[in-house]
Structures are given as C-alpha cells and as structure tokens.
Length: 75
Ligand SMILES: [Zn+2]
Image: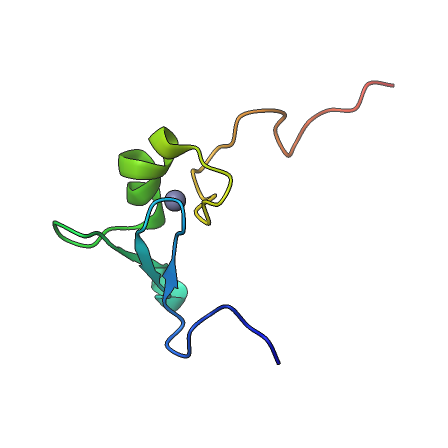
C-alpha cells in the first residue's frame, strides 16, 4: 500500500510547513513552529489565508467563498 501519511498520522502542509496532528473528535491540532498549538481554523487565520498555495492541505477555512451548500436551485 502506498500512503503519504506517516504512521503517526502527523501531516505536514507542503505549502505552509505547518504540522497537523489528528485529534479525533476534538479536532486536529496544528503545531506551529513557534507559539502554542492551535486548530485548523487557527492555521487558516494565521497562515493559509495568506499563503493561498495549491499544495496547501488545510482547506478547513470554515465558510468557503462561493456558492453555499444550501444554494437554491432556480426553477
Ligand atoms: Zn497550509
């Protein structure tokens, strides 16, 4: 089997260089190079929203721009 994920489940964003550790039901924990760990939302706020790189694995920015999931269909 080929998997890019490490055995520990720790993921590293190739775009931001930030480590993301799976936290189960409590949510993933983001390990910054400096400062206390945060959430994916924190990562997005602090790094990813500025980076906006295609290789970024953190897409959990909350409400994504564009059409909402509950978009009404024109009939
Ligand atoms: Zn990122």
